Image (cartoon, rainbow over all chains, first blue to last red; front, side, top):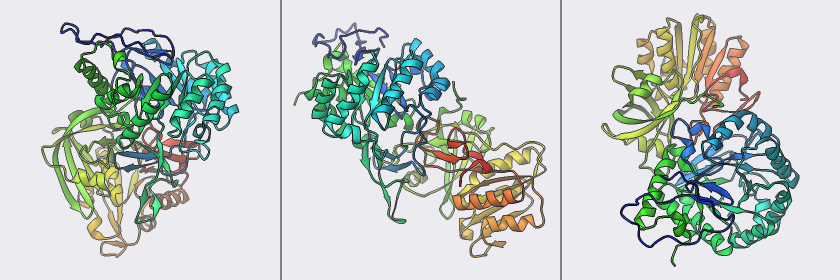
Length: 331
Length: 263
């Protein structure tokens, strides 16, 4: 695997400059990409909320081999998360209602800052997810990160958690989604990506681009239900929760494709990636990077397998650079 | 690291997988490093790749390990598609397990007499506790509660480990005690003195046992069950409400001081 970083112009897809055939003597393709101004040595990222703060996986593989990690969403103050049962198994995945339990930025940095800084020094950028109920809370959380986390490579602004009473509100409409990003843009020079709600993709993507976002990350889990028919109660403590896993990969893929058609912003594809083939689909649909989510929790060694499979796919396509395959889907 | 990392991935080869009581199976698999590292009260997660309704691994307590054969034994309940698929796995099949996970029972060598209170499948981590108590020469009794006698498991294993009194509490009274496990606890307290209670079972039973123990001023540890996604602290789905805020069953538990839990 190449450890070289190939910087590109922030926000712009790489030119399609790869030769048509891979020389037999050069089996290792360039896997380096640039997502939203964050140079990544390969396209593998982690879905926020499914990778803790990274250190939880150090027993399973060398986390610094990932292109980047996105840590679990953090607010300006601690959030307790939802009460009661928070997950249920369903066909092809799970439904969760964690409700963005988090310790707040200060505690997050106090407990994890040293590790996350060392991970950055080992060559793995750390993307910090920012959550809030109100514009003011988003701003406060981002200011705290700017003050306390000099190691942060960039931010993912979560405007789409399905497990907050009002969690989807900001991301549900283009105008409100843009309002959040406009309010945050002046507060940082670091890259701002947006974790989009799985609705109004094209229109919202364009609004976010106009508002100053550097990248899009999609999709968040989709609101769903699971009912125990014997007790007639929800299988989780709330009526609805977020569906994730391979069951929703085709939906995520379609939405990444829609976003790629609508904007020039780099896209991080998220949703049910279990294999290199799933990741390759996102790249072909227009994604620059790909996050592994539930699969990391089911098999914590899976990100490295997926990365190897993705690299093999690039070679199988006769390409020397994964950037040449971005958006190469042919209808 | 902010917290100690314990869990690793291990290959597991199934040696036995048989039904032992109504709704209960006994699984024995070979995973020598896991067998070596598991401490009483900890758990592991096991992959059942063939079931589309079980994408994540199933968290299970263990009942015993055998260092000589490098095997781990668990008694598990078949309660849904994932555990049904697990019950169909056959001797010689291989899968993957993650562990050891979580924190186990903490029993000081100063303890004079311990009582184990199990509700149904809650027997599993208490069997691992019994092995520990036996090895440490700490005297112990046990109560196993179930709705009916054919759902009980563990009496023979407990007796073999030196458990002095085993109260089998059933709703229909076809065993040596009619009533709930908590009722059995009250009954034993009339004649016996304990300085440590270890319990695992349904939430209502755990709460009742915790309250009786608190009333009698006896230290009580409870092993809590939660639906889990990872088992190693990365997802926040297994929250346990405690008097000092939400904790995770997989990293802070599954064994908690019963006085700390908000029931």
